[in-house]
Image (cartoon, rainbow, N blue to C red; front, top):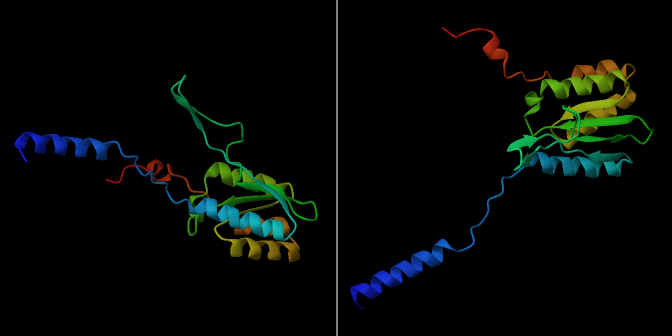
Length: 164
């Protein structure tokens, strides 16, 4: 085979592999999977609940992200228990309860102060445990506030001053 034919064949092969459809990698989102499991559990115990997503969307016209109409800090799952009591659940990835943001913490505390069942969980078992303890608790508000994780403040380290 001549040198010219080899170069043409190599160019054609390179072009063919360049234009193959690329496999799009999707990040594994364990929080979404946990939300689905929590929704299954809530339905099994007779709760009415819905998932709320507060993702912002990019506007090509204004060249910026625009927030949705949901209140900042709103939890991932909201609904009501079988007895009609309001239900709010902030879902975090396993072991990431400490990533609760201040706005989310304020939202949950506000709902607890209005006699709602509001918690932050990282597993279905944790939700079951909290719900069972909530049902038998004499002081429900105090119990819910005691299990609420401390909010994560990313500016805390900067406020303490320079390291050196």
